[in-house]
Length: 364
Image (tube, one colour):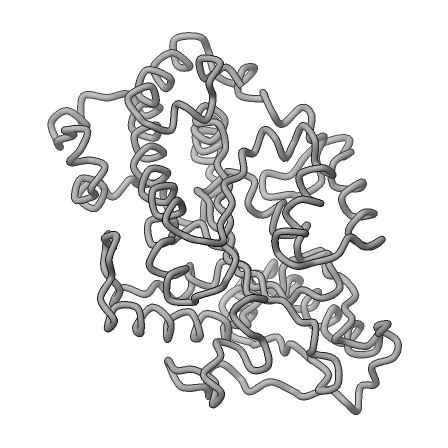
């Protein structure tokens, strides 16, 4: 079905999230009405790891409905802090209800990230209406005093009743990689992807963002929380030893703790993929074709065109942008970090089982 085949009259306007129950599943027991677990893709990673780019590549597919970091809005503090390998039935039920709640979050951040793409399940008139609303809210958010209002208005999905048979949902999270196993385990049959960036690349980007004041919240490591993690116990980390480290080393340990928790959980899942950011950047079409196939999505002209545009960015690049020269992204950290800082980060990561992901001495 082409986008133009869907008429605005066929569109169902979604209930405002503020009026929806705080938790619960659709009447059918599905996380999202009409979408079986097999068509739900959970994409996890650490902040500044390329997840927004990969998520937008998925969003470019005409059959994908995308949710951008809804767990940064609904934090799920009722869930286990560091879930173990064998969650209880009650924990799984709670996680499933939480995911259903996340899929109903349609704030500007979650449902209005740019660019937007034409969809098989949304006609051209509905697409124009939704894009216009998102652009207006982004403009409002840029005005003094307008940010709060722009975040309070829900953006409807405008899914045509007659066009949901191929609908896939992609939910991206950089807030909950430590809960990857619990959340994915609560949706049997879903596809789960973990994107890991070279630790030097991730740390360099975090340092750059903090120094430029680009984070909405002050960059804090939440040391007590990190030290309660299984990985911190395995590596013998203490508050005293952590306090003696340079900021780059502290961020490297944060990478180790979260990446170990997520990757260990990923290994236990039947439908899961671990992707290195460097591989995605070096051979983006090959990597994306494989991921689309894994997710049950076909290759399509719209995604191919966006991939081409997003990997050949020229001129100044925005910190949160998705248009870049992908080949330069692979080893940008070598130009940003001095030699001693690189060596300190690598010394931390060599303590981790994840060092095997870079078998050439963590060189790339």
